[in-house]
Structures are given as C-alpha cells and as structure tokens.
Length: 487
Image (cartoon, rainbow, N blue to C red; front, side, top):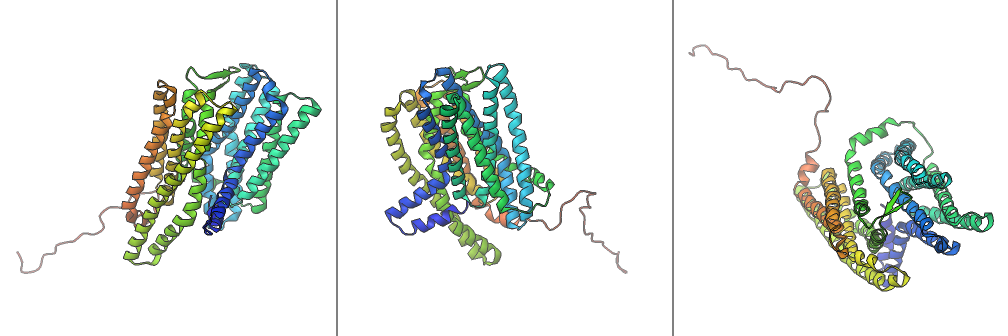
C-alpha cells in the first residue's frame, strides 16, 4: 500500500492531537472502509427487512452462505495475486505499461478458473445433497465469483495508489445493494434472504465493473504478451507459497473448530462454529488498526533509511555503506517496537469497549470467553506480518516462507490441542502460531542483517547461465620444460 504514508505524513507532521486523529481517520477510511461498508449495509438490511423474524434454518443458511463467500473468495485469490502484483510493479518500473492488461487478463482467467474449481462441486453438493433451491445456490455462486473479481481488481487499483476510488466504488456498490434489497422485498415481493443475497451479488458485480473500468482507464495499450506473466509464477513461486500459507493460517484455526462438537451443519453442506467464528471476527477488528499504523510509519521513516542505504551501495564509501546499514536495521527495530506499543494501547482500549458494550447487544457468554485469547493472538499476528513485509524489502523469500509455514503449521497443531482445553484457551493455537511465526521472522531479520553484504554484493553472475555441454573445470596448466645441461 505504498503511497498512503506520504499523505498521512502531512497530517502527522503538524504534531497536534486533531491532526493525529485526522490522520488515523484518513488511513482507516482508505484501508478499512470497504469492509466496514459491507458489514454495515448487511446489518442495516437485516434490521430493516426483519431478518430476525425468520426461522432459525433460513437465517443460518444465509449467514453461512455469506461467510463462505468471503472466506473462500480470499483463499482462492491469495496464491495468484502476490505474483501478479510483482509482475505489475516490475512492468511499471520498467515503463512497460502495455504489458499491464495481459497481466490483468491472465490473472483474471486464473482466478475465475480456480474459484470455479472450488465453487462448482460445492454448489452441486449443496443442491443435490443439501436440497437447497437452484436459484438460491446459483445466486450464492455468482456472488462468490463477483467478490473474487472485486478482490482481484482491487490489487491493480492499490498498486496505482487509487485507494480513495476503491472506497468510492464500495460506497456505490453497497448503496445499490441496499436500495435493490428494499425494492425486491417491499415492491416485488421477494423473500428476505433471497432479496438480500441477490442484492449483495449485484452490489459486488457493480463494484467489479467499476474497478475494471478504472483499470482500463489507467492502462489503454495491450501488448498481448501473455506468456511472460505465466513465467513469473515459476520464477517467483516463493510469493505464492508465502501468501498461501499466511492466508491459510488466518483461517485454519476456524477450520479446526469446525470439526468439533460445537460445530453447526446447515443443509448438510455448510459447517461453522458460531461462537468461535464471531470471537475471531471481533479479535481481528480489535487489531486491524495495526495495518494503518504500519503503513504510515514505514513509509514515513523506514523508506528514507532504505533509500539512503541503496544510494550508499551505489556510490558511497565502505564506511558510508556500513553506517547506512546500521541505521536501516536500527530503524526496523524501532518501527517494530513502536508498532507493538501503539497497537497495544489501541487494542486495550478497543478490548475494554467490546467487553463493556457488546454484551448489551447479545454478544456474551461463550463468545466473550473465547475472545480475549484470540485478541492476543491477532495482536502478535499483525506484528508477524510486518516482519514478513520487511523480509520482502531484502528479497529474503526463504525467510518469508519459513515465517508463513511455521505460523500456519503451529496454528494448526495448537488449535488441535486447544479443542481439548477450556473455552478461555480456545485461541491458544493462534497465540502459539503467531508467536512462532514472529520469532522466526525476527531471527531471520537478524540473519539478514549479518549476511547483508553477501546478499547485496555476491548475488550477481559474471557468466550467463544456460543449457549445454559443461566446460572443463581446468583453465590453466603449467608445464615444466627441461633445460640443456640439467639432469
């Protein structure tokens, strides 16, 4: 999310309370607003249309459908978007703007294909085994595909630093969704859940169309060079692995608790665990501000240190390079500590608000007993993600893979163990996994600091690698010649 910090810097440089609050509000609107808009419109539709008057099965079928749409839309897009983002950034850096549209179309095809590969078998099972009507199943599937397209197109607009336009598109789409739901229910006479699900699908479709139009407005030329895009997946498969395991780790603890006796099965297709899933959502919202803080502070402080080190490598003395490196890694340590301190204060305040306010709205009992441990786990998780991004700065792909894999694996094993513990410890798997990933990332950054010179100065090759017959290893041979008069 490069670019947000530049504008946030204008707020924070004033060093006043109102300017600081304005900066936090600005960053939150650009990063969290789309998610808040979707949740807000969904809750508003449920209240106006009388969602709570429906029977239990109908309400849970709709809730599980929306839950699966969001979770699996994120999971299906994660393996591809990281590599496509890398290709697009390289094309922009090299001013090959005509190669952006081929990248967009290849990624679009891959996302739709992989999403259909997951979604179609599940929808067939939902209809034939779960006996859910075809129209309802098809509408849910279309909503899933539209949301995949929304998340995918957001990638290109984010790289173009058009965050305000993304929030505007979500506002337009969710407004269409809300108005259409009212028309379908009160005027046309559709059912409540049918109106809401169809309206959300149309809203996501409107957002996807607006995002696609904005991408085409930025990039007009098309070189039709599709194969180089696919070559990036072979070259940067590390990015696929990192984001796959990181995204899987975000939800794998939910999947584990979906297999316990607490699970709820709807239509013999959807499986969920309402108390644990709701506690996970609250824990994520408790710490979501860490993303805004990290973006602002990295772009305002670390970027200058990184730029100074790069300039020293290009034309500085050895002492300049060492000083710049020392200052850069010192800045990384400071940013990680500042992120932890600021986020801790925010998380404590939000936690206290949730504990006091949410029980009045029905969020009590098991949800609030599970919530504290998960909140602590997500707090560490966002610190770990900051380390992964720092590892990207130094092209330490293996370090990022180790961090993501250790996080995902320990979270899975810890969640399996947590199913046998009291409710208050259900989130210990997230805590253990996040702390393990944070530890691996921290020591990998320290390893990168010690081996930075070798990574910068010893990665190039004098001879281009290729296929063919191997040259002999002996390049010089000294011969001893006999002189006259010697034995």
